[in-house]
Image 1: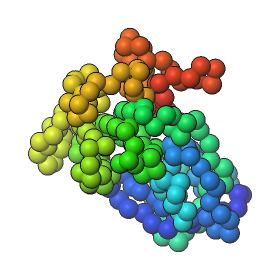
Image 2: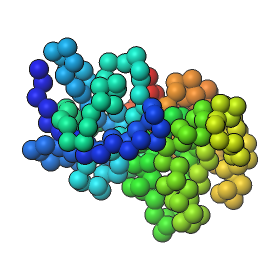
Image 3: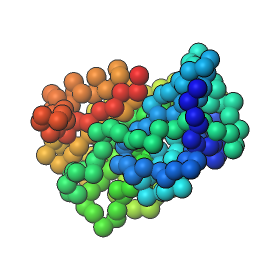
Length: 253
């Protein structure tokens, strides 16, 4: 069985099936990583180390722990066991971080639109914490889509961030208000609806275009495929090692 090398430092519940996990290394230093990258967590199950990849939600400048925003998959092998962990319990965390879903090489005058579904907001939280800088001309628009308002993890922090100035604009939207136990007075629909409206143009004071904006997509594959198709019709290009573009995507399953 694999040797555990990390501990659960905190578990903060956003709901019964959505939690924030803070993991600290045991006997080794956290790796340096880029905002938007991911690593793996694992537990020994039936004499085998079961590992899954999770985007890092904390920014690289935090060196005490790594934070993950995880949804409980009841029929899954790993997440039900993660939910059983108590503070102080040991688990495996890969010392290696990886991924090209990053914005560190983008020009500072390029604006950023982020569309995430569910826990696909995790890398965006890391990116905003790392790259939001009021002295830069860059604008951010973060669109987060979930089924009910209880699934809007980081909502309080993002509302606060958006009120610090005019650089970050946050658009939470839910698709099933009829299932929400609390009356929802906000936006209803899907993240694509915000993109297709004039909401970002109104917030920024100008229209996002392929010349001034990069679009980051994270979460459900159907959303990513639909958005990519729509963006291409407007002149955006998919980013790839062979040809840089302004559509960046990270599928979550």
